[in-house]
Amino acid sequence: MVSGGRLELGLGAGWNEQETKAYGIDLRPMGQRMDRFEEAVEVIDSLLAQEITTFHGKYFQLEQARCEPKGPQRPRPPIVIGGGGEKRTLRIAARFAQHWNLPFATPDVFRKKNEILLAHCEAVGRDSSLIMRSVQIESAADQDPAEAADNAAALFAVGVDQVIFTLRTPYRAEKVAALARSLETIIQ
Image (cartoon, rainbow, N blue to C red; front, side, top):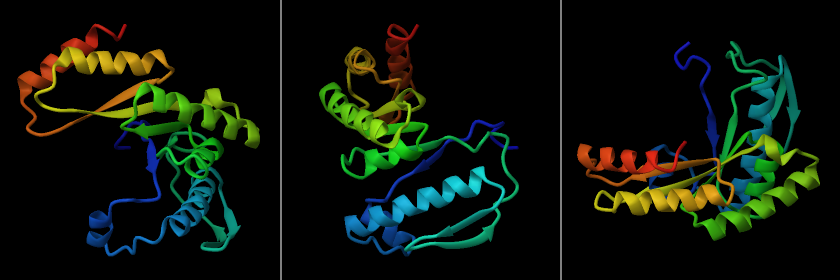
């Protein structure tokens, strides 16, 4: 077991045209991508959690399908849904995610999207406390580490559970170390 049971399965509908072209994937219009994505998440959830999956959808047809071997996480690895689309992405997160990641958001944007996630959870009968919330923020190599720590603290203050820093190159060791030291001041 490579991960020691620490795998999180990050899923999204796709957005990067250059990336999808490199893989030979047709980046369909957003509505079609979201339809396929929602159905795919339902299939993946079942394949990883159930012994046998039968599924008849618009895009996927499975008959007595198995996905073995199962990993050590039960009922399956946590699913991470990334994005902030209010009508579809957050509804899918409410249905399936154990972890929701909102990329590059301010505290105000997070607060608004989180309220929408809460409403979707209520609509599908899901306990919203079962979903970890993270925000991805970008930190430039020349950004003041104290400013980056303040940005993270502001996100924690509005209910974010985890802040993920995306560091722009160059990754100079002294800058990364300074950022880590600044973050230690807000993480207890």
